[in-house]
Image (tube, rainbow, N blue to C red; front, side, top):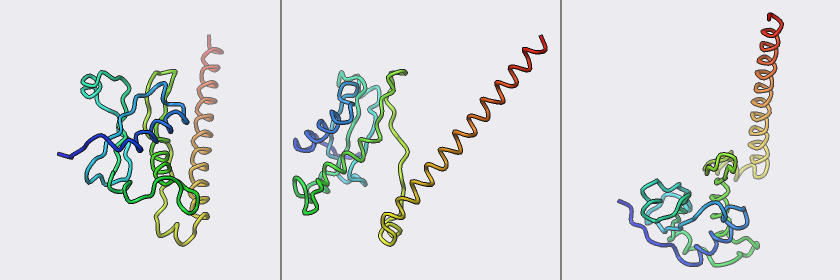
Length: 163
């Protein structure tokens, strides 16, 4: 069983800050835990109904962090002006969305997956190519959905003419 404990207060504050920035603080309750030997730097997990019951908190999202990795980074911006702790958390928390129509939390959004070696060799061009692939597939899916809707409308119109 994994060992875990409440994350460092500075990480908890960053999670709260990001939750406010992306507008989730009013819909979702966050708990930030430091998990020993976590294979990722940050992992987002929806708490199951037992954890929600025991904590007395609905819509609970667990932000699991690899505290050892966070400890290796300096607090605040690096020499390039990037706060990597903030960025690690932001990248993970951007996967969370709240659907107010269905009153439901959704984890998982379209992401780019680029091999490190490819990025190291081609840089931004690899990101641009991955984005183009994502947008092309989305456009194709939209076109197919539109065609299906048109066929359904034609079929419905054909049934009306028979009566």
